[in-house]
Each structure stands twice: as structure tokens, then as C-alpha cells.
Image 1 (cartoon, rainbow, N blue to C red):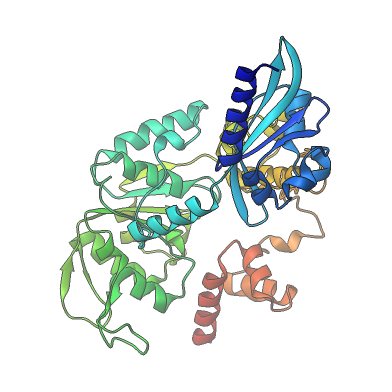
Image 2: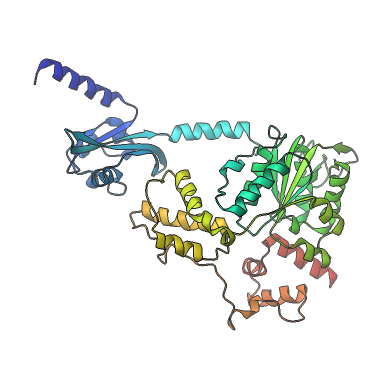
Length: 443
């Protein structure tokens, strides 16, 4: 070896040694021939125990570099977890005079960077008042979704109250955030609240705030409510159909007067806020049953957007999966066959986009754990379709049965288990507690 070439090799060797990125190189048999201290620190395997060994012996759980050899493909920005640490990995095959001679992998530990970014994010958005989704993030290849996005953009241009209707898991909050982000209020706060997630007393203080000493445990100095925090921005009220009747009256006043009064206070506070509400329930039916105020319904439903269930936009399924894989940095890991796509499109998806996302996440969790990728295996494919038979007919409302009788029947069938009863009734646990409280007080 001439002196010039030897100097170049020593130069490159020192670059590898001093690099903050972990660098691992293998020959065409998978044996480690390059391995620096940063790689040793990240994998927890000392240089002397790794050098010259097969990469599958040194890192048996995730030897992704071997796939580069077999597939001869370049992998960019692959996000991987190793223990408690997170890394961005880039891999590439290496050729000499057209022949494959090995592969190289660079690992950048971003754990501390993620922790720092999270700290900054909490400081900037410590109230959680920022929207993160735009309308461009919504997969809309089907005609029905393209029409939905078209209407959403038009409705974003005005300040009228908007009601989003759609089954659970269709992406109502994502659409609400997207509407906010193209509206004139996009630089203002976006505040979201699930009306079913809190008990009535806490829900009131969260929405309208409270004054110092308003109740036992109230924060000294009081606390602004979500309407105040959403001033000059947008408030999104999810599961509005679960809002208790008493709070419906207070919300109606906000819609009419654009002002709030804190719990325990006597001062009126004007608010400049656009209200977006969402529901997966039939508000008209609830209105006829006396569960939802008629005047509030018509105040909310000035503009209405109906989000189609996934079964009505099945042609979007391959594009939704593609979006999930890109988000997880796995876009190059899998391609579906036409037969697999047909199976996915023929399923009814009761849980809609959320169910599809959960399915794909299960599949890739198992893939990362070393199992083959099979979305139709029993461990991955968990059907939520309901087929009514004599065994489960009690899920349906019996003839002449009112709400109280149905609740009591299902609670008895579930031996008092609130969670299972709420699930069968199609309502949130806190909503069931409120209904039980009302039943007990009426009796």
C-alpha cells in the first residue's frame, strides 16, 4: 500500500472514531468490519466484543443492516427504539466495480434532542392550545372526502358555529384542527374538550372557570375557563351530545351573548371565540327524547359537516395505510397485494380510521419484535363487527323498553360492571354515572 493511500485510510478511520453518530459496517457475509465507539455506546456492546463478529450475533433483535444486503436497498431516516433510547438510522449497500461488497449503517442517537424538544414544546404550548393538524394531513382521495375538504375550506372562511357529525374514529378533531388552521383565527389558540370525559361539576369549572373560593379545593386566585383561554381562537367541544342539560343552558348563553361568567363569580367576561362541536350521536333523536335542548341544537347546527365512515370511503384505505407508514418511518417496509387490499376494503370497520390505525400499529409492533408481517393473523386481526344472534340479542333495545329499563337490564347482565355496561350502551363511563345519578335521584 502506497503512503498516500495509507494516509487517506488513517484520515477516514479517525473520522469514524470521532463521529458522534454510531457507524457500523459489514462485509457481504454480514461480518462487522467497521464499528466505532458511538455505535458501541448506543448498542451497549464494546468494540472488542463486536469487531469481526456476525452482526446478527451482536444485535440479534434488530439487525436491519442485513436486510440492506439481501434487498440491496437504501434506507433513509428510519426511526428505531433500542431500550430507552431513540435513534435515526440510515443504511446503504456498498458496491465496488458493480459488485456488492457490504453495507454501512449510521445511527444518530436523538434521545436527548427529543427530550429537549419536548421541554421546549411544553413551555411554548404548556396549555395545549395549539392545533397540529392541517386539512392537507387528511387523506382525501375518494370523491366523498374531497367534497368534505372542499366544504371545510369554505366553512373555515366564516365564524359561524359548526357541527361535525360522524361515527367514533372518523377523525372529527383532526378535521376541526384543520379548519382552524386555514381560518382567520389560525394564529390564535385552539382549545379542545371532550364533554364526556369529565363529571358534571368539573366540566362546568373547566368550561367557564371559577373564582377564588368558589368551592373547596379551588385554586387561589381562581382559574380561567376554556372559553377564556380560547379568546380570539377556536374552541372544539367533542361529544357535545354528552353535555348535561344544565350545562347546555350555560353553553346556549355563551353562543347567544358571547360572554361567560365564572363559577362563583358575578362579573361577565366577553369572549371572542368560534365554536366547533362534534358528536357521534343522533342529536335530533336526543332532542325529541328531551336529552338535548332544541334551541341549543339549532344554535350549533348553523353549519354542518358529515364525516363519512371508513366503509363509505374504502378507496382511501391504501392511502391511509401509506400515510401511517410514512408517519412511522416505515414506508419502505411493506407493500400490500391486491388481494389483501380487497380484504381490507370489504371489512366494515366499525371503529373507522382509528381501528385501521390500531390494526397497522399492532402488525408493525410484532414485526419490530421479529415476527413476520401478517395483518390477517389472529394476533393482529381483531374484528369488531357485531353480528346479532339469539346469544347477543340483549344488546338491542327490547320492545317497549325505556332508557332507564335498558340501563338497569344491561347493568344486571354485566353484574354491575360500569365499564362493560357503558361499552354496550355506546356511551362514556362518566355519562353512565350521570344517568345513574339522575335515575337514583328521580326514584
